[in-house]
Amino acid sequence: MAVEGLLAFLLIGMIAGFLAGKLMKGSGFGLVGNMVVGVVGAYVGGFVFNLLGISAGGLIGSIVTATAGAALLLFIVDKVKK
Image (cartoon, rainbow, N blue to C red; front, top):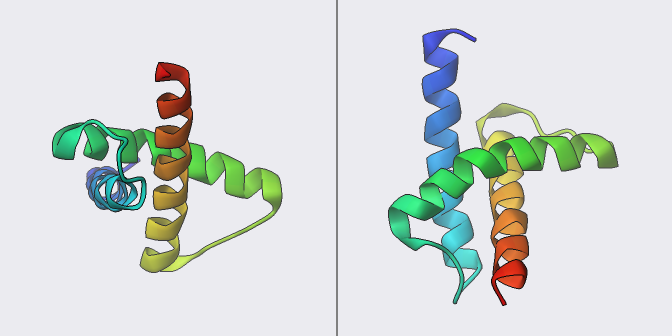
């Protein structure tokens, strides 16, 4: 992966983590923690979308995919914590 691609992936993950933290009120790890979860969630979202046969292209599609993955990850972590 090129440096530009890695930076774009990290930026999209951070945006997704922020958005997922806002969507999943009452759960999360603060701003920085949610951004880290967003980066991991980008992988989770891509994996889940691929399993479901959903493809989302472009910048907006990448943010939606990563946000969905981050929200799913926050949901699972919240349930495991309880």
